[in-house]
Image 1 (cartoon, rainbow, N blue to C red):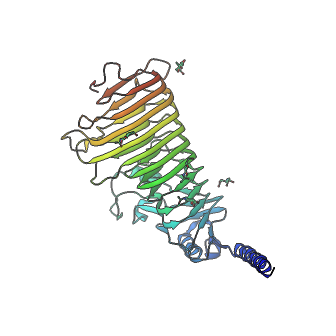
Image 2: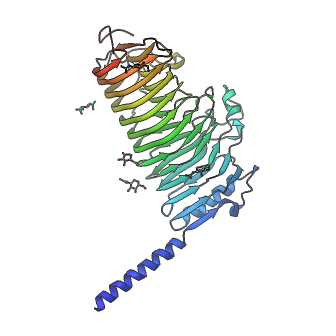
Image 3: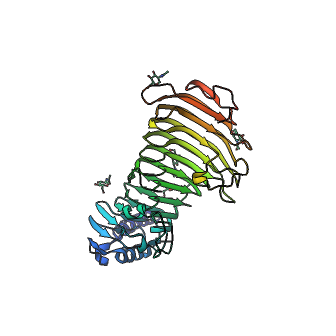
Length: 402
Ligand SMILES: *[C@@H]1O[C@H](CO)[C@@H](O)[C@H](O)[C@H]1NC(C)=O
Ligand SMILES: *[C@@H]1O[C@H](CO)[C@@H](O)[C@H](O)[C@H]1NC(C)=O
Ligand SMILES: *[C@@H]1O[C@H](CO)[C@@H](O)[C@H](O)[C@H]1NC(C)=O
Ligand SMILES: *[C@@H]1O[C@H](CO)[C@@H](O)[C@H](O)[C@H]1NC(C)=O
Ligand SMILES: *[C@@H]1O[C@H](CO)[C@@H](O)[C@H](O)[C@H]1NC(C)=O
């Protein structure tokens, strides 16, 4: 009897404690830390001060950027570890970077690092990149030559980034490194088709990441996979303009980790230079691409809908001395339909040194824009064909030179 009484009292007490703890959730508003939100005054220090307080507070805590327009000078550094799960909420807010590249001393505008269970919700992050895209030469006042990435996430594990908008980044919009077990949902990424190096989302050295329900219109790759990207799912993403979904480039730098376990499903590419691409540099370094699957993809006027390019050499800036040492295996293309803006809809230019292994094409129907018959080109690959594949894969034999 006493025991039961004690137990129920204890449960009651714990319940009240839990309620109390809930009410203690710390919410730090950047306005309370002096942010003006007038779009002119540098609110960067207020944002960082609010972050410090929220990060040091007992969880669950949050940093709130209320609706309004904020100017934030670089670098904005929000780093952990924090006391527990933390949220950055900016629904309805627009945060602007200064347009001048020389105001940046690092390669990043907003740097978010070493946080476990970060939730980042809403907000429009405007990189104001128009000036940076025009400067092809380094400005003498710049300490770093590479223009800044809009938002970098480093080692933010178990996180959720949702309903966030990135526009007109000076360089990549979002770069993510080491954020295992993370989800990106409902992102909107926008920059003009002719803006240089504005990759939408660049991933590297991550185990487990999902990108869903997002729209990416930009001047470079929609999503790019760097080395060590593994167990990545891309679902319901629309890309274009831009350079499409790209694995690589790989094989340029030593000690690259494999890209392994990639599923791209239910995506649409509109007017992009490439649809789904795997690229590696000739000669140079070894690497591995394994277990990569593209399924239910719609191509609209895409220049190279399906492409493996193991002679990737932009600006001819590579050593030519030999074939790529990157080994590509276990790649499937299933239910890929739509139009190619060029005659060659399927191009497999695999390495003569390490031919592509176990490449499957299943239920493909790619025609040239306007309805003309498209073609395929293959080198150093013998694709397995399942169902109807249009254009036929490698019509003139499996080892035709490209
Ligand atoms: C997403 O963000 C937009 C713009 O900030 C906002 O209007 C909308 O309510 C947000 N949606 C959700 C589900 O939070
Ligand atoms: C992945 O992250 C979610 C959200 O923080 C968490 O609930 C889950 O336990 C994590 N999974 C693993 C395997 O760590
Ligand atoms: C990604 O999606 C897959 C399949 O829906 C799920 O099993 C996995 O847990 C998800 N990973 C993350 C990080 O949410
Ligand atoms: C390709 O897949 C097969 C079957 O799952 C597996 O045995 C093989 O190791 C994979 N190839 C590579 C390079 O991992
Ligand atoms: C392939 O796509 C074209 C253009 O959309 C269409 O006219 C044709 O019927 C399709 N062929 C098959 C076999 O589905």
